[in-house]
Length: 454
Ligand code: PHE
Ligand code: NA
Image (tube, rainbow, N blue to C red; front, side):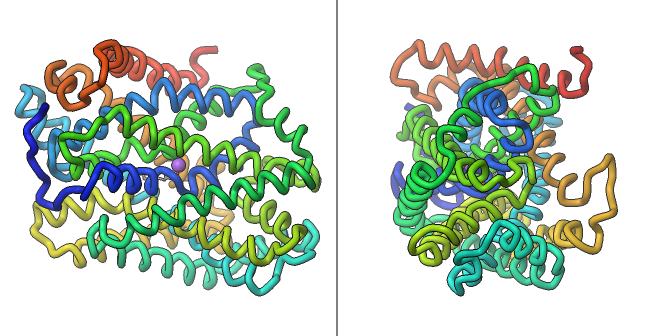
């Protein structure tokens, strides 16, 4: 058993505090907003199967590696990646990994906050009965009008970022734990209600067929890359968020057990979100490939049709906002911890600086839905570039580096001790995956997405 060294930022009160915080990080807009819309854009079944394979074969081993790196380093990801290479005879260049993560975090947070702002905006509108009885055209129009207003988007983006900064400045554990404990199960229940509604009133059988009948022929190399990126994004891995949380984890907690719980909860919520969305999409004749507005249009239409829909809708968007908040705070944690550790900033200032920078970049995303919608690079607007660059490129790249470092630089003795698998075969499986399978899979998917493998 490793000795119990602690991070200067403190330690989780219990194993459950870590699991709750990490699950709070994992479950967010990635599951409820992004998963359904990219499934719809990429044609359903085959995409979901590739996604699940990425979670299991790449995501799970990388999450274990990221937690173990954090716990072994006991510092912010940047400083952990500064300290560990020297200790194990590797090049200082490994510290790039920490910086890459912090940069990816800024990009993710910048658009994440804008989309979370949409969810916030839908709370009062749902409560006011805006969607009650509305037809699909009306809900679509409402969404496009929201996007067309830079002022509104900026307002909600600012509000969300301020809420996030407020929580992070008080330290991650305080206040968060209770919230996650109560609100996550509630979100889960509400998703079940939506799935139940879809079973009764939607095209449920068609949705099942859509989601689980694979047509691999229709799957492009690019789609496989998007599926892998989504696995990283959804599990919160590849940018150091889970590494930072791992650095506050007691040495006595089982990494594989924790990882299983977090990954399981994350995956179930994503599938449930799909099962809530697609029966309505298919029954109402909406377009599954309509993009980032998918859940906002579909679910608010669904709520508008169901009994007590204004109540359920309000609660739903409130819970989604909370889920987004518990994810956003984890994205801010690596950069904040670094400023506190190395620059000796006080935590509230560090938080303000990090949130302020991400907020500023987020304005680009706000404008990409209106004033700058015509400004494109490679056919992508500003927000799409941020999303693609961070989720599909930077997170898998971070994962690749984490895997190589944990598998090839850290001695087996260290990783075996930190992970503390209950059985030896479990560790051997992990080590084989992290040394060979994960790097090979990420590289092949990167190369394949360039269309070079035919
Ligand atoms: N996992 C979060 C979600 O699914 C987003 C996230 C990505 C959080 C990366 C932290 C790090 O919404
Ligand atoms: Na997620």
